[in-house]
Length: 482
Image: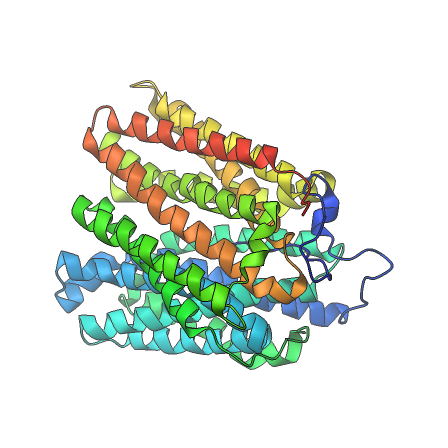
């Protein structure tokens, strides 16, 4: 769900400045490779962008079909939640591991494996006769998405250097926005017309095409052979991320005890095990010396806090429209359409221009500031002002802010490492964003639902504060100096 930019070819983090557009170029004119033919590059871009579209589509399309799934399989409310949570936990927990494995075994190979896993999981979910088979299918889907996402972003670096990268990044961001929006719009229609299985089956042709075509159109740089697999590091960091996201989900349902034990204590303990393992491993999953880069440390913080401010927005808005403004689900869905369209247009048209002219850091900061304005607009919306004046402008600000800041967050992380760690950087950015999204959604939703009269203004204000703080952190990020 993120974008990556250029990585240097040195063995240490680069001194590329995040203040300039050079951070997205990847290669200087004298070193830029000729690359594949134009037609092959177009097929490669279509394949990578379609993979991102499918991942985002599946994240949102299933949510709309949940009532149909519950009625068909006679699932309880708690069991139904695992149709969503199984995917989220698996996807978020495995991103970092899969990103590192992609660097070791080959990003194209990992992309193919991820596409195959995603297809198998999708077919299992679509043909599920009971809740356990459905949840199992969602777990396999999440694992496939975790393989796909960092591998695809790593391949984006290899296949689209120089002036091609800004356009590729914008299309990737547009695919993310369009996938989420299409899922919301199409999920209900498909479930109503063809049954809930159709919301899964619609992605199968794309994932099958990825399996067949990856080896033919995607180029990959040479990977370093791995002789030792860091099993202890992999298990501990995966467990920490899963526990953290699970704790955040528990907080959403008001289970504070589970949040403290599972969401705080367990991740802290596993993080300590992970750090110890990385210091001793001959070939660590995450080389700790990468974090000597100030740019990388700041980038991870930007991903966590930015993810909290962005991802929570659409959950808050959906609840706000239906609970505070008493809109029906259908009306609430239509009210969100301008948000999706705006995000798509900004990602496709405005973002590449901003990246080329001002660079990723400026885009990130500007996007977060616009996002904060949108939050504050919704927080201060006077009673009786109506949707057109009180809500729509805030939604448009939010959509613009998300589109401008989402992709450049990964760019910041990517510029801190060399190309051999492209998959790791992608997985680190995506994993940090997922954790932030889970924590932000849990925290701000809890605030919103505590008091129906003042809860939503307080939640939007809190989200604005987080966005502004993250923008300040991004503004303070300077050239990476070791």
